[in-house]
Structure formats: C-alpha cells, structure tokens
Length: 235
Image 1 (cartoon, rainbow, N blue to C red):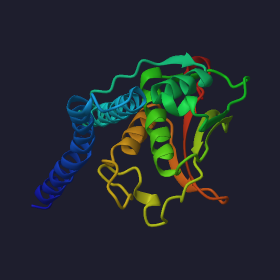
Image 2 (spheres, rainbow, N blue to C red):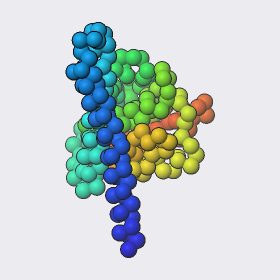
Image 3 (cartoon, rainbow, N blue to C red):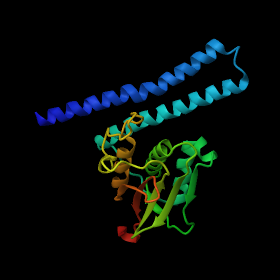
Image 4 (cartoon, rainbow, N blue to C red):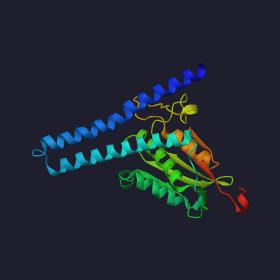
C-alpha cells in the first residue's frame, strides 16, 4: 500500500508539472501568434521582431522541458548508454553556451577554465545537457543582468565544474532536496523539478558527484566532478 501511495504521489506531481510547465510556454506562443495574425497591420517591424523572439524563447523553453521528461524516462528505464571519449572541458562549456543562445551573446556568463586542464572522459552529449540544465537554472534565478560564473578546476583526480550565480541563493530547507525528482523550491512553480535530478543521474553515471551550496558572498553554486582516468582505467 505504501508503494502504491508513493506511485500515486509521483503521478500527481508529474501531472501537475506537465499541466503548468508545458502549457505555460504553449500559451505564450499561441498568444504571440494570435497577435501577429490579428494585429500585423498595426505592428511595426521592431515589435513584430520582438514578438517572434519571445515566441522563439518560449519554444526553446518548451523543447528543454520535453527533453527533460524524455531524459528522465531514459534514466528511470536504465536506457542510458554512455559513449565515453576524452573531451576538453572548454569544448563542453562552449557547447552548453551555444545551446543557451542569447544568454551567451548578452555577456551574462563568464568562463574561468584554465587551458592546461586535462581532457576529461565523458559522454559529450549528456554532460553538455547537464551543464545546460544547471546554467538555465542559474540564469533563471539570478535575476536580471546578474552575472553567472562557470569555473573549472582540477580537484583530487577529477575535474570539477561549478556554476555560480549571484541571486538569492537556495533556502537551507531546500538544499538537501534540490536533486530530487519533481521537487522545486521556487514559490511560483517555474520549473518541473527535473533538470537538476537529470544532472545528478548523468554525473553519477560517469562516476562523478554533484552538490549544491550557497556561496558566502551570496548566490547558489551547483558543481559536479568528472573523474580523470589514467591508462588502465585507474583514476
């Protein structure tokens, strides 16, 4: 009976998340299209461009949400098969920033990754997705025009990649739960609580670890490690 109760609660959380978080960007896109169709003769070119840009951002948000649902399904079903190759850390950071599009061009993200970092064995696509999820989360909660830092360092036989924002930080009661499925500490329900849970699954599949903490200067820091394996598979 207890397992049945847990399953029902998870199903309810999923349905609530899908209802709000998938329908919200769809409603925004439909609203933009309605405006363009009904008022196109009254709108100047700049306004039309801004509306289209807004629709594009909402479509990208929707795509990430659907992608997270699919990735969680793969994780739960044990369908994640790693394709491990050595990759430069800067390459995966650049790929994640490219996925985020306009945020990179706006100068909101600062990268601190030494050129002498050794290549890290990883599934490039999965670690890129993990970093995209962490960055998206940091940019969302750091406030308007607040810088987000990506810092990569060697640490005890592993590369640690940290994403630090300058927002309000994570409530102490939420810190132990930020990587749980369907858990979101945001009061306005702006996320499904899947992004960081997926990151945890991807990182741990690589033999790494992930953690969340508050920085003493303010803001939250999400960081994860990727073990550097030497010849013969030893770390």
